[in-house]
Image (cartoon, rainbow, N blue to C red; front, side, top):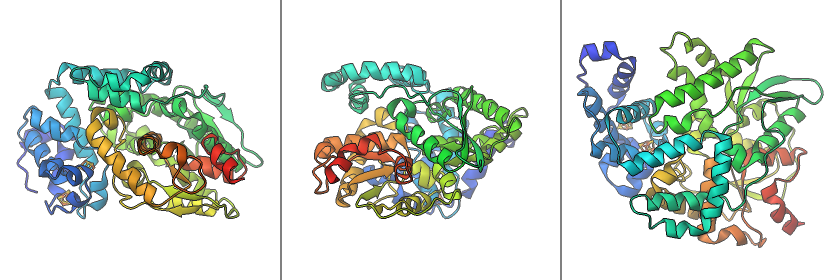
Length: 456
Ligand code: SF4
Ligand code: SF4
């Protein structure tokens, strides 16, 4: 694609120079439109990757403030990155849309209710203490979700938020907070694990399972003091200032460990966070104080499935359980991790099925299912129907956002209590690492207890 940015604009702004380079790689072939969820649903070129690239080019090249129309189409983008997997020219759409979102936040004034919703989410979600309190309140308000839908201007978003809230909240895990978990037997590796923000509140069992399976296989696990949210949630809302602050806190916490007793990896159990931490190197490439440290952190960042594969776990006997594996977009498109989790599940004795349209997003996408409830609901229904066709006993995935979204889809379809298969038990949605932990000597995941009892 030809561009005509002013040379002085490119020289003055490294972010603009990076975006110009990305724009030049696009040959506007349109292959990406075939795998874009919003183009699939809405059929509008401006809701396709190619259409958005044109909108971003026009906005950045001419130094224009964002318009309502540009904001509408960029806001509808899930940042699922399916277009990056499809693109034959290697267009780095993620960096381009991240730049566009930041430009929108700097040049466009959103409606009061949009600002209120975004500020509320930014002030709560990245902080596990605040998120736990907010979830407690949301649980109380959940029965009034339908009523909340009638609130002027923001009803649909409030309704979506309450419907996604859990009906009960697990108690805080004793494995949460800064601490060290020794390896069993001879230590093979020493890793830091990102605790995350929302995940340990919604399902502390995921990190517990990861720590158990890693330590059982000779890995010392550190939860360092000072680490917190990876910054993805605010990053995707265009707030670079906040996302960089979160990232810097993590970089400092992990660097202290690297320079202390050393780290073989930084393990991440939420693939959405993994995509962001692996991008810290790019985020800080022009920051003299952080560029080198951030690049080192990104090089060490690994999804938990990558580390488990390196450990070469012993194969387990076959189990009479069929798992539908849902590959999160951040796993398959963001990190290009496609087969590892499936290999692990098969080696752990599960029968693995892959639903049709596996490359299409479930509609979770961070806070997308709150900010764009209509599109997210349509994608959720499509995903749930595709999963249902595989008739699984359970669903496994590597991202808490997808787990919540798919579980909500099952509830909407009436499968949450009855299940698809003939066991009569519910169809649980679990994290892949919970299954690997169970198969290699850990406890039955809490969500599977009903199913396992029904099969006994
Ligand atoms: S597939 Fe790649 S090169 Fe083709 S239009 Fe899409 S982004 Fe551009
Ligand atoms: S990130 Fe996803 S929703 Fe956005 S343009 Fe690419 S494929 Fe479409």
